[in-house]
Image (cartoon, rainbow, N blue to C red):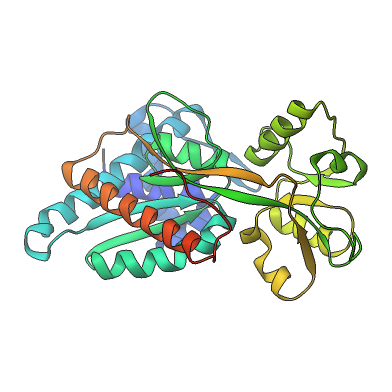
Length: 312
């Protein structure tokens, strides 16, 4: 199977169209189409369903994308492994993190890891928990951080911190005299919540079930950008961490209220042990994991990130 054909296929699959794929590859569309057609002839099955707005993957295409992503990453790593004898530790490693937590982690992580391992290329991907879990299983990312991960065989989970969660609303929406919020008070408020099985919704369901409270969301939104816009307009209230709204807080557009007792959201680091990796890849993951733990610890101890560190 031609590696070039796999690269063309992956680009078209990720872009959703032959025209966009050819632009990204900087190759003529007929050449891309011809290469993928030869690939389909070799496989004996189509990898794309063509429609008026582009292409979607067939079942065979989904399987090929999953396997080829891992293969191409391993090829990149192999080239780096061969070169590493003369350049020290080198290679490519990918790290996934939710956007709000990435607000804190990414800048110091890139700086610290880059200084320690200048020949290692670090790729950072932001995404929601469900997507990150899938990327780990497929081997598309090597290390990830998630909120409240569900224990699962084949995953190594390392707790990093319990991140404080706040009730968030437009500035002045609850009145100046309001202090800490009781969980019971949520039943009286118009809430903007993510849909199930989002990790934050799962955590909220756990809190309310323990207190015998039933909540009714005014609207369900699975995008924090939209949630923040609705909060700024005063549509309702939501439960978020500081990282998700740091900009709005600094501009005085939103305000936060702590819960009584304080509410925390577990945040952990994960690796998938079922993905085949070289010895150097395992070494890189270990070095990155150590750096992530150091960065999180320093952010919490300095007060930049609001939360509690797990026991040593």
